[in-house]
Image (cartoon, rainbow, N blue to C red; front, side, top):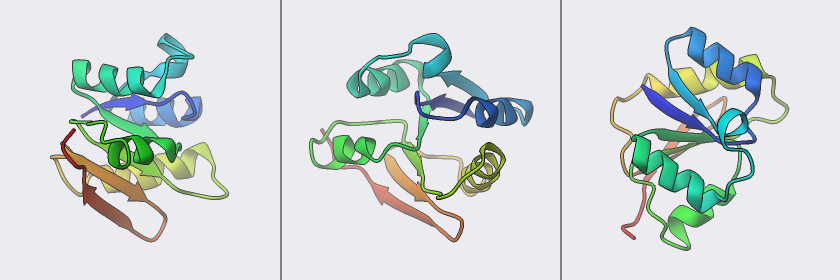
Length: 119
């Protein structure tokens, strides 16, 4: 599975995901400082699911109708450790194979899915 980790995603979590076989492009490592719109464009160009801790991507997807065609997974854990983020995220990712057009909010207790509106 191809993921794109937003700039706020912990490096240790990215390493855990990679060790588990996920193909993770890290904004922090490769293109730090790019806009949220550029992040979504990169997801589309590389056909990657966005994984983030940033609620702003929900606003982009819904209020401003910016399409994230490969899907967005928002991890909502407080407090959190890189290991816990990785475990919760991997459990959620294994629940389905098609994340295209979906916005997911993941917590310790549940996975909430909502289709994103067309742009």
